[in-house]
Amino acid sequence: MQAVRLHGHGGTDQLQLEDVPLPRAGEQDVLVRVHFCGLNHSDLNLRRGTYYGLEEATVQVGWRQTPVQFPLIPGSDISGRVAAAGTEVSRLRVGDPVVLYPYVACGQCPACLRGDDHLCPTVEYLGSERDGGYAEFIAVPARIAHRIPDGVSFEQAAALPVNFLTAWHMLVTRGRLQPGETVMITGASGGVGSACVQITKLMGARAIALVGSREKAARVLESGAEAAVVVGQDDLSAAVQRFAGGDGIDMAVEVVGAATWASSLRALRPEGRLVVCGAVSGAIVETDLKLIYLHHLSVIGSTMGSPAEFQHVLGLLATGAIQPVIDRIYPLAEADEAQRHLETRGQFGKILLQVTDIAR
Ligand SMILES: [Zn+2]
Image (cartoon, rainbow, N blue to C red; front, side, top):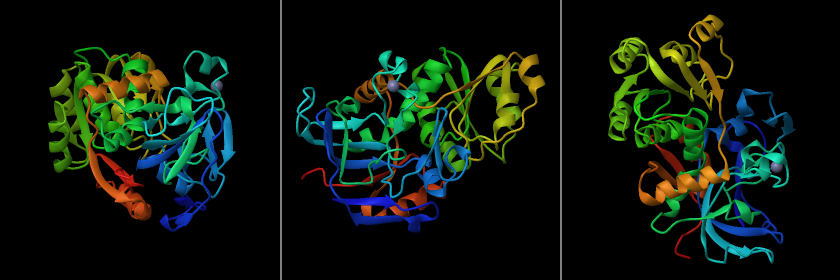
């Protein structure tokens, strides 16, 4: 089969389109013919060797710190059709349209047994710790393959997993977002940020979106934000005051990290909470702890979410309650160009690779 594999840390020249053996599917696995694979910032960090801002050449989940096994097929957001199913798989049949929950967990530890696969100590992330979707086929345990509901396209399905699962778990499960609350969203035109804008509105809360340009401000207002602030041009504290009143906002969503961390903390009302799921501008920050204890603030970490939450956001997609925005679709052979596009941060919404033809 054709696959784009990453051969080492560095530039996009480390990504090579090549012929590789078809992955082998076990008795509890499905072989999926990949139609679309979405790009994430984690793809870039993996290539650059700056994954989670940690030591070069390692991927860290929980306490584990594992060297990246090259060559590796990247890609975490995957939709396609079941091409073959193992003998012990009864829930899915050949031809079924599926989207993959991006984590493969052990299924046996206390976290897995209560349905928290994302907290499994040996969890593997598709496209980082095991091969992902920049390939015509992928073999995965059938339990992570969720049937795509009627009316949802393969493109929409591939734009959903990482962004909307992360946004839902962070805002609703971890942040306990309530109707009527105010939420400040950094990086609001990015994948997770724009998902946060949509979910904030869906929950009956109000979003103030931080973006990098006037054009992106117009786009986030169209997608449901009540106010937009262009970072570096608009007066953030004045905008927060106008939006939330004198006390400050109820919740800040940190996707950006170092560049916006201090202003996100300062924008919070007493007892406000800051939820953090990313650090694209840098993971090391300086924090005035007085701000946290004198204002009774909560800082809450979050990464991805559970299979049940994944099924829930898939249901929201089916009803049209959420709508992933797709920026541009590249053929698999142009995966390097697609990554360069993501790197420039010029996009609004999801960048996808079309890996195989849907019609065939
Ligand atoms: Zn487990």
